[in-house]
Length: 126
Image (cartoon, one colour):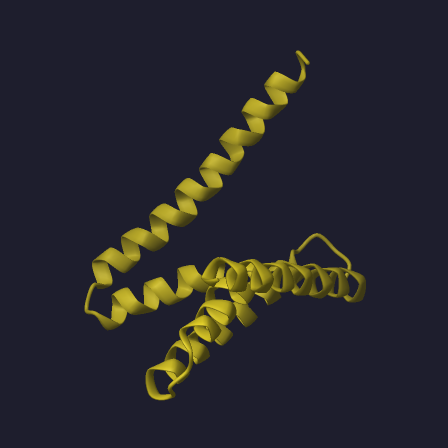
């Protein structure tokens, strides 16, 4: 049942992300990815709020999973990344947080570039 809640929430979050990004692109045309930035910032705010809220307010487990893993996971995984970093910092693991931040961004962008280059090279032969 938990996977169903995650799946439904993920679908809703993905639709919300698409709608917000499309709206931002229409309102603010240009090269800067304002839609993605907006989604990431909103998602980070919401996951932080929910994490704090659920520490003090009793809620069914399926609601937490639906909102935090499902909707926000579909909306943006950056929100999970932000919460994990916050948790590391709050736990006194600043060095681990910085490593996670740098490795995720540096390797993530590097691997995206590498995947792009490989796909472009392979597609020339197909």
